[in-house]
Length: 109
Length: 114
Image 1 (cartoon, each protein chain N blue to C red):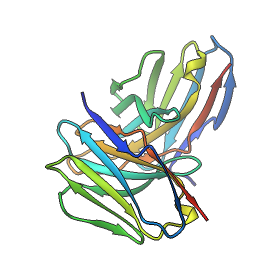
Image 2 (cartoon, rainbow over the protein chains, first blue to last red):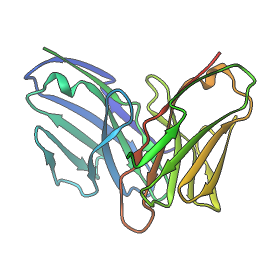
Image 3 (cartoon, helix red, strand yellow):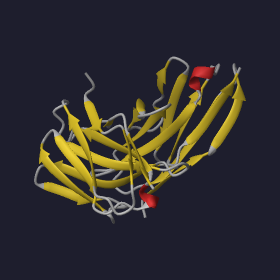
Image 4 (spheres, each protein chain N blue to C red):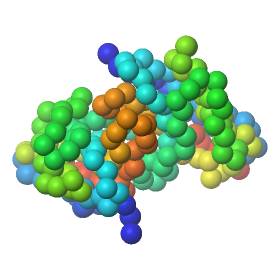
């Protein structure tokens, strides 16, 4: 059965902390792994990863994929209250996107 | 204007009623998807469509039906709504060729079945 598992399910940190969110997967015919940020409403796209070991970076956020061990991490450095959200990991095969249950991040002032 | 729109944005209905959620897109994408989101369960796929004549069930299609009226329109129907269909529903689109692409999401429809 294809599945995506995220950990932790929730996380509370203080501004300035660094956090690491985890995503492991078992999906046949892997094509890509995607990270989304969901605040009040629709998920917004952060990163797409297709190759192992190549870090994607955008400001304080970065992500990397390990296709041998079947996982990805999303790092957020110097967290801000605006980073509070649910972070979703999804894996795409040829037909579908499989989503994890998300990590709810709460950044306190 | 938003690339992926959903109507209605919020809906309260009663058990047993038929309800339709509509999705339209201006991105020109071939592939469209319907998901539901429940707290702690992420996004679960209800139906997906690769073109007007290609519609497929997702992991939780029971109690739902869909219609792809045109490349840009994909509707989700609940034939006889029940309370455990209370959820946040998202429509999404993506390109569909040999390359890999992300999905684009509509703003969501919050459905409450009483």
